[in-house]
Structures are given as structure tokens and as C-alpha cells.
Length: 255
Ligand SMILES: Nc1ncnc2c1ncn2[C@@H]1O[C@H](COP(=O)(O)OP(=O)(O)OP(=O)(O)O)[C@@H](O)[C@H]1O
Ligand SMILES: [Mg+2]
Image 1 (cartoon, protein in one colour):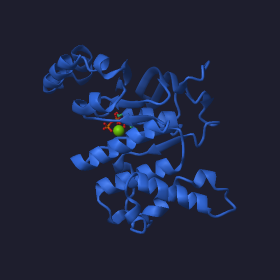
Image 2 (cartoon, rainbow, N blue to C red):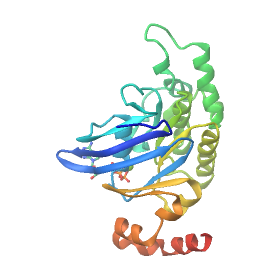
Image 3 (cartoon, rainbow, N blue to C red):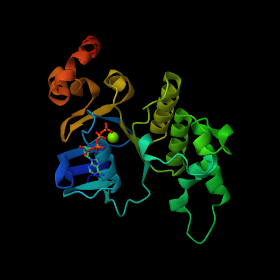
């Protein structure tokens, strides 16, 4: 695949299967740098698989992924990841600061311990998500929204230009949602590209510069007003479209 250097992530003809059943089919998309991009689609659409394929966690049947113009192997460490909350074992005995410090491990040679600069980066990331006061607490003792913010700190501490987040707003209250969005926006302003799985269509247009609409295939990619249109959403969400009619009206009034 040829790269032009303008894109943070380039995906070409990506097909991923589990037990010979395709979860993603022939997805091609190029994501420009410095954008906040939402990935939307119903449950089971392949959103998490899309993120995992970009990270190289799942092997594609066909297709390529380039990160900053490089293949996944060469781009190790250039992408940070915040997993979907259900995928994390919260009983693991580890403090908040240690979780943030995990973001530095790729940068710490195996024969040394974390240095001051690693601890500083971890604390700075905790400050960014406003969890610095919890640094010595066990991760398992925190609320869901607080745990989510600590995992964002781990990704920020890594210092990568690209951040992939799988449903960071799931199960958090409105205030935490605002706080997380604020962190995402500040990360974007500091020159990061963020790809965020999101399931709430009512906030998708407000939160993101671009949206990727997926259900096994990619149905659309572009600015929210082009993606959130009735025909596309009815194809992807089928009978459940009626709940979106108000949203579409709202979008129509804005356009
Ligand atoms: N490890 C796995 N082994 C087998 N099948 C899987 C695995 N992970 C995902 N799948 C299947 O692949 C499809 C896509 O799953 P994926 O988790 O990517 O969807 P999603 O859009 O993230 O869904 P959700 O909104 O529920 O998080 C689903 O049909 C799912 O059952
Ligand atoms: Mg998912």
C-alpha cells in the first residue's frame, strides 16, 4: 500500500474473521491526522474488532493497516489503546499510579526500573484526567468512571500520537462523560489523532469531527452530517431507526 504521509491510519481491504465468520469485510479508510473520529454501529457490528485490527491484536484474513505510514510491527508504541471496560480485570492488585506507569513500559528497557521521567509522565497523565489525588489507591476500589479515566491516563502516559478508545463513555454519568470528552479534546489540540468507539448517536455529531459507520462493512466515513442520514442509518440499524428520527430532524435543522 502506498502512503502519502498525511494520514495517521490507513486501512485497506481489511477483512477479519473469527472461526471463518467475517466480523469485518473489505474495509478501506484513511484517517487524517489531528482529528477526533467516532466509530459507530450497532452491537456486534465489528467496532471493537476494527480497533483491535488497527492495533494488530487480531490478524486480518486479507488487507493492510498502516500507522503513520508504517506497518504495525514497525509502528509498535505509536498507538495507545483504552480497552472496552468489560475487557479489563479490575480485581488485579495494582495502584492507580502503577496503571498509569504501565503506559511507559514500552519505553523502559527490560533491564532497568522506571526512571523519574516515567513517573513524571504517569503523574502528568493522571493530572490530565484529574485522578492525581487517587494515585495510591487500588484500581479495584474506584468507581467505573474513575477507572475509565485511569485507563485513559495509562494511554496518555505512553505519549503516542494516536489513541484508540473503545467506548470510553459506556456506563459513566453525565459529568464524567463531559470530563472524558474534555480530555479527548485537549489531547486532539495537543496534536493527537483519536479514534473512539461510541454508541450514542444523539451525541455523535457534537463530539466528533468525522464518523465511521460500520456494520461488518463500512457504510460511510465523513463529517457527521453526511454520515447521520436517514437512509444510511436505516440500512445499518434496520427497524430501530424510529428512535433516531428526532435526532435526524435536529441535524437537519443545523445543516
Ligand atoms: N474473540 C472472538 N471470538 C469469536 N467471535 C468474536 C470474537 N470477538 C468478537 N467476535 C464476534 O465478531 C463480531 C463483532 O464483534 P465486536 O466485538 O467487534 O463488535 P462490536 O461492534 O464491538 O460490538 P459491541 O457494540 O457489542 O461492543 C460479533 O459477531 C462477535 O460475536
Ligand atoms: Mg465492542
